[in-house]
Amino acid sequence: MSLTRREALVVLAGSATLLSGVVPLHAGTDEAEAEIAAFTGGAEPQPGRVTLTVPAVAENGNAVSVTVEVDSAMEGGDRVESVLIVADGNPRADVAVFHFSPLSGTAVATTRIRLARSQTVSAVAKMADGTFLLDRRAVEVAVGGCTG
Amino acid sequence: MSSRPRVRVPQTASVGEMIQIRALISHQMESGQRRDSTGQLVPRRIINNFTCAFNGQPVFSCEMQPGIAANPYFEFTAKVAESGTFSFIWVDDDGSVYTDEHQISVS
Image 1: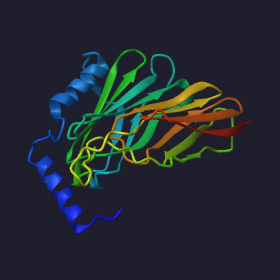
Image 2: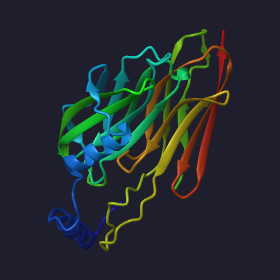
Image 3: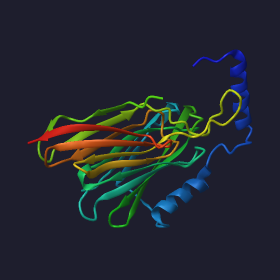
Image 4: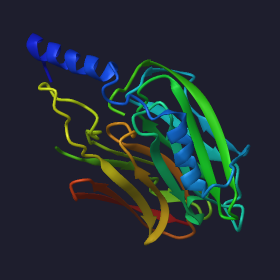
């Protein structure tokens, strides 16, 4: 895609409008926590056993690799049903929900997400026994994926 | 817009072996937040769901929001006890469905 100078200026002007706060730029901590509460049904997720791996510094916010790994036997009550990924600095806090099954073998999955700015990414795992686990990581974003 | 799936599944595995699956599909994942050259919001159009099943049983799936990067990519594991077929389904906001299948021989 190539832009003429005029088009480029219009795009820049549009971005400036966004930056000026006419449109909410990011979901914020409250919305992120609300997404987590909706996922857990109000239960307090406990830290530990879930590991969220993200780069400490992301050069490009348009595609940031995210890996979630839950230490689980994937049998009986010690089985991961699903994992919610939340990014509190994006226009919309909820990013994805992974669903695992006994055929998954492990509760390990990787995807690529958009990060609009430097922010905190959270992963909440729902266990088959009804408990919830949490990990959070801060990510410095050099160039925001402003379309998140 | 072409949405071509590219999936990697081993062709063979032993019973109970943990296998690695990678699935990528070409898709712009238009977030609905972006503005075009006239300043109008470009309507959202993303793939909102991805599912992997083995012989009809769920293995892994993902509900996606616009925060998933363009050309959605997933890497996950599977442990199967028999030969069979992995099926992959992507669902687009516009109702399109993209599919792929891979056989695995388990011994």
